[in-house]
Amino acid sequence: MAVEVGSKAPEFTLKDYNNQKVSLSSYHGSSNVLLVFYPFAFSGICQGELCQLRDEFADYESAGVQVLGVSVDTPYSLKAWAQQQDYQFPLLSDFWPHGEIAATYGVFNEAAGLANRGTFLIDRDGVVRFAEINGPGERRDQEAWKKAVAALP
Image 1 (cartoon, rainbow, N blue to C red):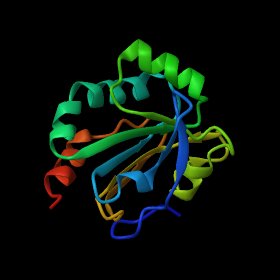
Image 2: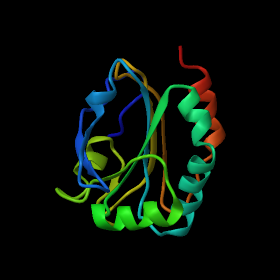
Image 3: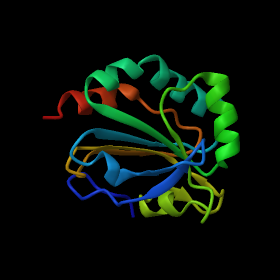
Image 4: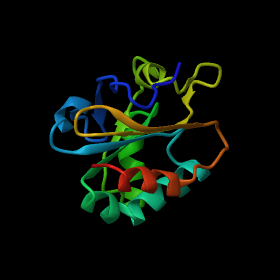
């Protein structure tokens, strides 16, 4: 079952592409978080979506929103992809236990072993303000995220 708008976002700690631990709770009180689950690094739709985030990163940053990308890839493949694409936001590895955080958010596709395209906007208090889940191969409309960001207090 997916995490719903108005609920408390499940806490997590994952390693980023530098093998540094990143916890959702570290942003509480200081930053909103746009949590973007995607199936795999180096895949077409995922790259298009994350490159759009990269190109519009300043808009999120000026709105007080920290972007966090999450996939089931290893930190090493995420680092190679981040360097290749010049992503300025952390990519987090939900590799092991495989997809555990994606499952907690209701976006893990067990049959395919990947995270579906789940997007969650979490406010400074840790409350989910926007939630959307798209299946593999289904591109997301990032305008909906921007409207949700604009509606944050």
